[in-house]
Image (cartoon, rainbow, N blue to C red; front, side, top):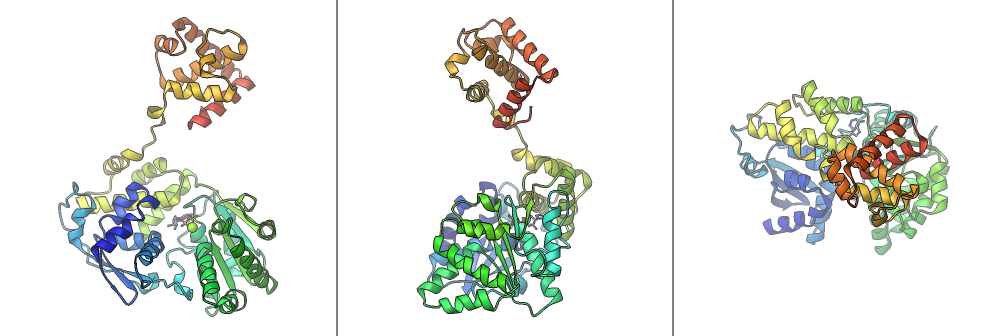
Length: 459
Ligand code: ADP
Ligand code: MG
């Protein structure tokens, strides 16, 4: 059993960041598989929620690949002995006083077929969703759909980067619809699952049943991560007909994707135009105030004591993705619980040191030279040559300026690195470019900004 577990999580190593793998999977052990339920032992209560919300499908799928039988559920038991495994060097100072609570909640359970209401994640409600400028439109459209499915925004297409709340909104629509109409048949699933079921139905001669389920017996279809259908022609074809059948009977369809409809790779044009025929709403990465609000909301939900200064600190550091934001907060809570320390700024800084942005460190004179060359379409040897023609000297000056401004390299060293120039040449180059920037010289501003962007900083 242990070996099975080892193999299973090993097969997932590449699909998670090293940090998430070490934090969330490495300390977990398997106990048993009974009647399709996998019993996992976890170090503390945070693991149950986190694993159910983030790794459940991955784990079940990976376990299925190693077994003849197909487990469909996870159950968790807290085993404090595993706390020591969380990070060996972080031995707990005291035992957490929290009552042992195995979060074996029925609502978290999922089975592959048929899809049930319980597939909706109870935590992903509108109440738990923080609205900000970055997600306002998608949120408003989702509320409208949740309140009057099949009426106004049909289909609703939500797109945005990973971890920005698409799945959350989709679940929230499901909850709202069920609140108003508990009898509604809502099918909520990923395009991947749709694909797998479709293939299974084909192979097992159950396609009629499949079609009845998706085309006739369905009131609302919530299809997550449609980009998975890229290049899967036959499934796209099936989905196209599913879409039409539902659409023509005024059944609500909601689709999410990580990119704008037109940008989904290898997607049939007719499907794309269907997606665009309704409401298309995007979700962007949240602004800092929204990030703070999200952190506070999560902390409240998880009963984590989070002070304003820590919330602001995390929000400053973790920018791109709400899932990361949430993961950072939970990791911090786990760490605090293990160490018996409060969640304060000191602990937050210690824990986040590895993710603090440090682009300057990584950047070298050579990186800047290369970026400048590629922008101006020059060879590195030309940039370092003695040629004084403007086509070469101007890019060289820009490169010297960026090196000085960004890396603070000394003038003599820069002279050296640009093919043995005198330090006074470097000084006048830097002055000249600063001057042009101050005058808002269009060419210079454009070049510096573009090169900075390419190198991952803002000029
Ligand atoms: P996506 O499907 O876009 O990849 P998810 O919906 O899975 O992202 O969101 C990732 C995590 O971030 C979830 O736990 C979700 O609850 C949370 N989240 C995202 N946006 C918000 C928000 N605006 N308010 C509260 N939580 C959010
Ligand atoms: Mg998602």
